[in-house]
Image: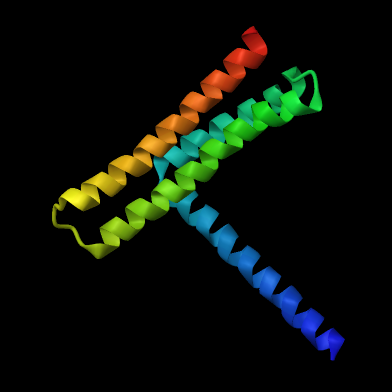
Length: 121
C-alpha cells in the first residue's frame, strides 16, 4: 500500500511541475517584458554569483533578479485573468493591471537597490 501512495505522490509532483513549466513557457511566449527580463537574468545572475563575496551577497544579487521574474509571472497571470473577464473598460480592471505593473516596478527597484548597496557600498 505504501508503494501505491508513493507512486501517486510522485505522479502528482511530476504533473505539477509540468503545469509550472507550461506556465513559464506560455509567459515567455506571450510576454515580451518577460523575455527581456529572462535575457537580463541570464546575464546578471552569473555576474552576481561572480561578484558576490559571500554566500549571502551572492544570494541577494541573484535572488533579487529571480524575484523580478517571479513578480512578472504573477503580473502576467493578473493581466490574463482581467483580459479573460472581458475587453470592456472597467476601473477595477485597470487598477488590477496597474497594481501588477507597480509590483514589477518595485521588484526592479529592489534589484537596483540591492546591487547598488552591495557593489557600490
